[in-house]
Structure formats: C-alpha cells, structure tokens
Image (cartoon, rainbow, N blue to C red; front, top):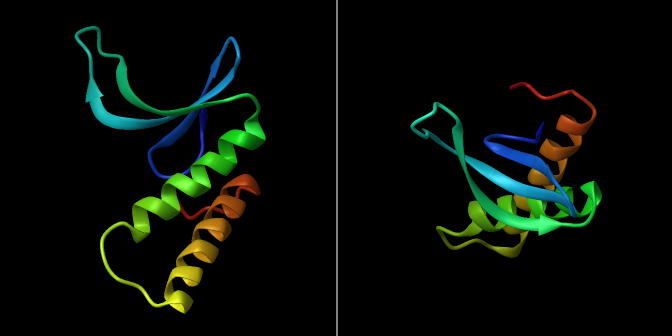
Length: 90
C-alpha cells in the first residue's frame, strides 16, 4: 500500500493497482475500510486517476470562472508533485 495524498492510497492487486480512499472507519477486526475509486494497470495510471478524482472533488461544489478552475487543477498537480518528491507539508 502506498499513501498518495490526503486519505488516498494505491493498493496493489494481482492486475496492478487500486486507487482507494480511507473511509476513516475500521471493520470488526480493526482493519481500515477503503472505498475503491478505480483499478489501474500501472502506478502512473493510478496517479493520473488520483489527479482527476481530486480535481473533480474540489470543483464539485460551486461555480468557478475558467481561471479559478485552472488554478485548482494546477494546485492539485503541484500537491501531487510535492508528495512524489516528498515535499509535502502533511
């Protein structure tokens, strides 16, 4: 399992990776419960799906001008880049 950003994780499976989000809950055995976002054949695809999902989530509520939406997209891109290069503030 690889922590990506926020509560998103890349879980390995027999076909590649699963992008999952930690629900903040545990099962009866104390294991974390994850919601599956999607299945990917490579880690690069997983990061791409993460970017699309986070951008969608952040733009979901509200009305934005094009310049504002592009700023959100750029911020998500930079956040993921910082996580990849271990420059995250989390």
